[in-house]
Image (cartoon, rainbow, N blue to C red; front, side):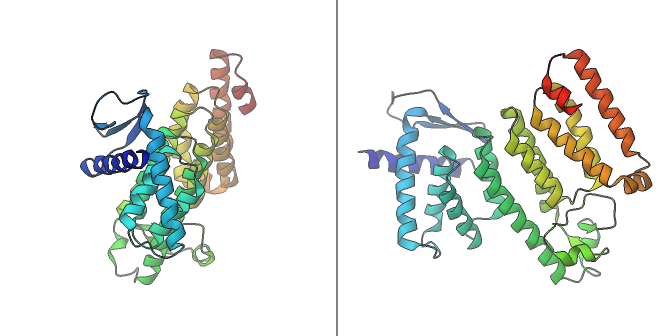
Length: 319
């Protein structure tokens, strides 16, 4: 009986994603037992709801079937990748910190059965319900690392002096801009005039990554994993570009003022300030800004917050 219900639930959730591929948020509805003879899954305005009573049944069916696939096929390319993708998606929506299932998703990406963009979208969806999922952020870093390496490889394979990337999608190491060169190849750092072809989709994904981190931080206070991932994004996706650092310092000022007890958010600002101090000469020459002035403005901000909200230790630690 449980297997029959599990199979129906699995078919229902796949049907939900087929009907609405733009689902961007989900939650478990407080319905502890089936009350109507209809599907316990509902989609409204790209939001997916699962009645609580069906969650364990769906998870057990998909997890057991997924491991059965794994034991039969091992590390080989899955014979039915679409079903394996659906099973792994259902499991991770319920329990995202299952490392084995994330490894299965990696196999699907490696074999081209699932695109990097699709897996990043799945991660964003999971973080809407589980914003502190460490394994989800770890998997996102693997995907972004792979995406950036592919971008760099495609750039090196083409003639940068003749291709279209010199117009909109070209990033120069010497240019003070949004540097999307990954810190993964030593020759990239030794060549100051290396140009990397980054199409608009990749650039948009890098910007989207910062938004994903912010949404996760909004959903869970002191979200260490979200802020650590945001730091990783600055380091590996933007090479700690000064322009991006300054933009992030500005963007997180109002956030910090509205989350005065969030130690992780203030730690992120400390990271930005330290990076700007390390690039003080370039900051002064290219942006006519003194790093010490940024520190003074930060002290003024914190003093104002302390006077407005006395007794919050996060503010004092940051000061």
